[in-house]
Amino acid sequence: MKTLIAESIVKLLEGVSVEEVADMLETPPEESMGDFALPCFAFAKVLRKSPKIIAQELADGLTEKKAELGISRIEALNGYLNLYMERSGYVKAGMEKLAEEGFGVNKPGLGKTICMDYSSPNIAKNFHVGHLRTTVIGNSLYKIFDKLGYKTVRINHLGDWGTQFGKLIVAYKLWSSKEAVEEKGIEELLRIYVKFNVEKDNNPSLVEEARQWLVKMEKDDPEALEYWEWFKEISMVEFERVYDMLGISFDSYIGESFYRSRVPALVEELKAKNLLQESQGANVVDLSDYDMPPCLITKSDGASIYHSRDMAAVLYRKETYGFEKCLYVTGLEQTLHFKQVFKAIELMGYDWTEGLVHIPYGLVSLDGAKLSTRGGNIIYAEDILKEAVERAMSAILNKNPQLKDKEKVAHMVGVGAVIFHDLFNQRIKNIDFVWDEVLSFEGTSGPYVQYTYARAKSILRKADYQKNAQQIAYEMLTDDYSFKLIKQLQGYEEAVNKAAERYEPSVVAKYLIALSTTFNKFYHECPILKAEEEEKQAKLYLVDMTQGIIKECCELLGMNCPEEM
Image (cartoon, rainbow, N blue to C red):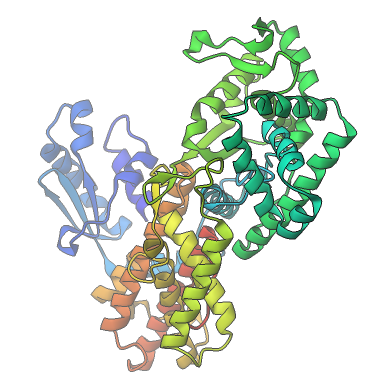
């Protein structure tokens, strides 16, 4: 509906796209202001007219198309173009679109591939709340792009190579044992890693010893690689446990170590294209023309580095998957790194680098203090999820002890609460981790939308509802509460598209809260089960459509919805 209106408006304006106008068409906060409103202030400079005149001219130009567009009244007021829809036609068109397969969401991504690089924890370090952000943001974006028809490759680019392994080997030899590691797993690895970072300040030789172990790894030393493989295995056990709790899986676990062997070919290509320079014994790509530090390719001892392994990964993914886009969900602090990598790839002459996108997110702090694995200031993701489930179970036992499958529901609600808390916040914002906020089951929370879904399913069960769209009397859905809910449902496709365009799952999360709030208002004001049969069936159909969209939105965020709560 918005698109049709936007197409008509664009014909009356110059230099504006249908997409821009459709995006500007807003739902006013008060129904007295119309069903849709277009602020005309943005056009004033280009058209050299006041917003009031522009709004009036648009109103005049659209008048003869009112019936065609399903508009009952047009109003120009204070620089706004206010449109009042003819309800019965709007309801019928809107509900029929929602009834289409996929809830009326178009598939612009069909035939296109997107590589998604997210989660990507460092081996031999605990999976903490900071890793949780990249994991749930990336998983949600994967689901959103999948919804839009893209073939999406989920890549867990494990941090399984680098200096930390040299440190761990030294630390293990000095302060641990095989028995301790086998008994305590990754907790023991973390303990000795933290100890190393404390002790190195008093004993600088430890750093050089760690560097030597990394050199041995680079030269395929059997003892060094045996330690490395062992630390990897221990780490993956914990990672998989967390992923299972979240219901998250990946298509590829190829990490940094895989690309180590591809760096020499990268070096040769850079040499052949006269891009490689020597700097203090190291090999770099000069980026001074682009106001960036040089992109380090190999260190003075010939070892590969983070930049070169990421460049090798980009080339491998393009060759393997033929991606349209390759997206990297990592912390804001890595912005410069990816700018360097993408620019270096571009200088190599590849014309597809516009498809390389860094999707940064804000930091996670604990009561205002930055999380640090080195300092031991961390919150484990597994502990968060377990406590959330326990709190959910406590709430169930208090409010509905007779509920079937309590353990399953508690898991859905607890894990959902953690996921929703993260995704409701704008991605780029820093998050201060406060337990009471994360695990709140009130207000703008995951449990709130899950409860709304369960309420809708309960209504349908009580009515023994059987869907029959062909017999729906749409005129029974023109009351204020039903109409507002239908308008809200119409925003689903737009929310999905905006979330993809902005790489922003919070768009879906915020839409979900608005939809749940509108539905609950409709539920309280409309006596569905007591209505006359024709009205009852129409409103049950609306309830059915609403629960479907709520469930879809939750799935796009990576949450499951219990049928009962």
